[in-house]
Amino acid sequence: MLSRIPRARALLLCALPVLALLAAAAFAPLPYTIALPGSTADVLGVDKGRQVITITGAPVRKTTGQLRMTTIVATAPGTDIGLDEVVRAWFRTDQAVLPHDSVYPAGKTNQEIEKRNLGQMRASQDSAVAAALGHLGRSDKDVQVKLHLADIGGPSAGLLFSLGVIDKLAGDGEGGDLTAGKVVAGTGTITPDGTVGPVGGVALKTQAAARDGATVFLVPRAECDDALATRPDGLRLIPVTTLKDAVASLKALGDGARVPSC
Image (tube, rainbow, N blue to C red):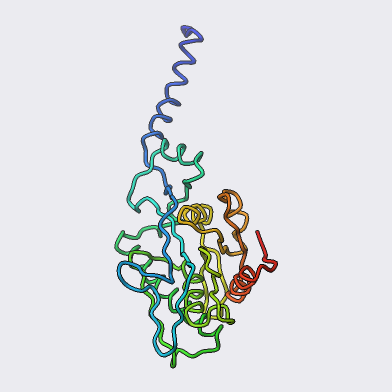
């Protein structure tokens, strides 16, 4: 003979496993990384006592204005991220929740990840120099360029490195600065032929740029929507697909001419 369980007690018994699962989820680490706006650095200036761009074999211009590369800061590869942190970050515009494996390669140690990021930065610097010299019609046999930026890895500064080399060697081509004295920031990978590629984290990088005084932000065209989503007030977004686009837009901006926008 079966006894009947009161309805309230039955509901409670059914709810207990669900509550237990929710409680476990709240404390279990989740496969996410939380990112925030990071530092920016003026590639025309000095970083930790050293010029970011050093050029020999050709006259170097004295520049005004700034070309600021931008970064994001993400929680360390081995950091456990809980449900409460994910929920809190999800509703903030100055944080982003990213799949862990989209930021850090799966199965790699912290040392391996750091080595990979530094390797990407070195490759990006080589591509940036090749793109800049190619744009100017100069040869690396005659002009030597060294790039230095401490404690930053990855390929996303390529576009800004190229623009910095061009500004130091040629400016706007008419005796003025490529920046027209403005604080210009941006992001984007670059290939030796000058193609600019997307990098991710643009919505956070625009916030870092505005925080550090930029009024213009060069963004890979494919990431315009992301940049517009949280664009800080007063920050002008200029889409680019090639180094040639970026140079032309900055020249037009300095001349007061029409400039593309996201």
